[in-house]
Structure formats: structure tokens, C-alpha cells
Length: 410
Image (tube, one colour):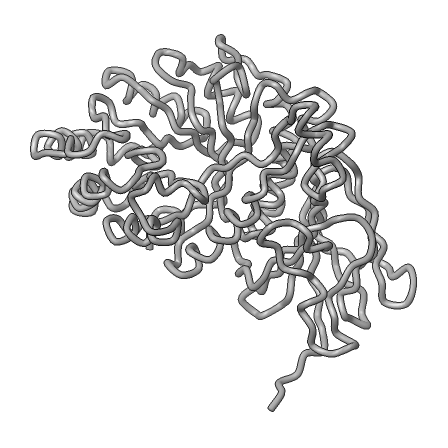
């Protein structure tokens, strides 16, 4: 059992406050916004004081190892490096605010041996904290692996991590020429002249697959960039968080905390994006105890017109028990709890526009919805027959539980 099995749902800042900016105000701003942890790059003399400040704020830290660069340069983890790493862990491992050690971001093949050597020393010295390696998103093998799956297989052979994590930010503005050439396609948002990156849902689905295979937790990302317009910031951030949850995420990360004043300003005070994050984190933390108990058994799209998406109507147990939808585009995360009670997290697939649709749970009894305010369950009504009529704001999700008359077949 790793540290993530012992902790509640983690919402982590990535990365900051860094190098001299770790103050009661900066860490306090993140704590007030509902973050449980953050990853910070610190000088050696800042580490213990920063851990103390994090503890005072009720948060934990993933610490970028001072004086121990790894990044993308192979063969730097020699005996001297390992000894410094061991000494650093021995110095901080008993601090209650420690979450783990940042090793490297987006490593590629030549540094896997280094990661494996560092992992072995970590396993011997402090396996009670997190060995943090963020992985590449889909399509980035850098010609050192046969495929994306092969790259992850090789990484896990070197260091079987406690979580699966890869950042790929889905919504990007496009040029006038690009928009003119592609408008009308399902991954282009005409009014905002933006597009959804075509591999976004493939990335989430592969992470979901590998998390289940390795019995690791999926940690999803959201971009908290400073260039969001005030009108779209909430929808774009919520879309990424909620689609990550629909794919089974058991932890969330925001990129970035202080780069370009994304979440906190240089003086540690909150930005408008942090105020948005606070509202989103409030909902997530309300649902978190339930989400942590759910096991992902499927993810469906209506319509399934984007790359690597699975149609909702394909899931059929007979004419009376179909899960299906009519109306605007949605993502449906399908889950079971420990008692095999079915759950669905239904998310508006559009980060910019509201969605209205009807959803068929395949039940005679109305499903229950989990309140985003106090986590209480209450029954929703059927509008016509056994169809539930639902409305969602941009990127918004709703969490349901329901029981269908599923019987074993020969």
C-alpha cells in the first residue's frame, strides 16, 4: 500500500511556489482554494521552512530535489547522485507535510536506467512517500520506443510507479485559415475559433487502461493558463477536470501555479483563475469520498465522433436496459462501487457552450444524483417515460447512481 492509498483525493498544484516565493501568503492562497498539495522547486536551505509552512496551511509538498538535476540528460545518476538523494530523503522523510520527491518530468528512453537506479534507492530509503515521475502524452516516443505503449512499458519496468500521469492540454486557439479550413468538424468550436486536440481522449483512455493494468491511480491535468478569457476560464478548466474524472482520475493537477501568474501572483495573492479553481475544487472535494471508492468500467461518448471515443449506444444489454442519450455532446464515465452499485459521471463535452440532453439509465426507478454542495443523494424525476432531461453548463458534470435489472446470461 502506497501513500496515495492512505490519503484523501489529492488536488495538486504543478508547479510552485518556487525558489524564494514560498511564503505563508503563497501557500495560503492555494490552501484556501482547496488544494491539498503542490510541487515546488526549492533550494536546499528553503526545504524545511517550506515544509513547515505547508504543514501550517494543511497541505503537503512534492519537492523538486535540490542540487539533483535529472531531467533529460542520461547517465547523471551515479553513486554520488544516489548518495545525495539518500541523504536528502533521510533529512526530510519524517516531516508530516512531505508528500514525495519530484524525480523528472516527461522522461524519454535514455534516462529510464537513471530513473530505475533512483527508484531502487528510494524503495530502500523512503517508500512511504511518493516517487513522482510525470509521463509523456500520446504520440511522444521521441524515436526511442516502438510505440507509446512500449514507452510506458519500459518506464514501468524501470520504476513501477504509484500513479499514471501525463499532461496534454486539449483546447487550443486556431488561426483564421485553420478555422476556415476545418470549421464544421466535430473538434472545432466555431464561435470561439478554437479546436479540441484530436488525441486528448485517446490520452485519457490509455492512462485509464494502464492505471487499471498496474493497479495505479490516474492523476489527470488541467491547464490553468493566464490567457483564458474571463468568459471561458471556468468552462475550459472545468471541462478538463471533469473529463479526467469521467475517465477514472483519483487525483488532479493544475498547470501551472505561478508561471505567468496562472494561479498565484508574484506576491502570492490569488489570480482570477485561482478563484475559479476554488469553486471547481469545492465540488470535487465534495464528491471525492465517493469518487475514491468507484472503479471505472467504461467511458462512452455521445456522439462518438471524435478520435478514440466509444459510442454510448454500443453498450447494450437488451432493448430495455440500454444506456443512451439524445441531444448535445456528452462524456459518460461508468463506474461500480464496492457493492457493485452502478454510477455515471455525465459531463458536458463542450468547454464553451451549455448542453441539454436526455439520458436513459435503463431503469424503472429514477436514479439518484449526488449533490455538488453537500454530497447528499436525491432522486431525479423522469420527464418522458424513463428518460431523464438534463442540462449542464460548459464542461459541467453530474454524478448519478442507479440500479438496472441486469441478470446473468447463459
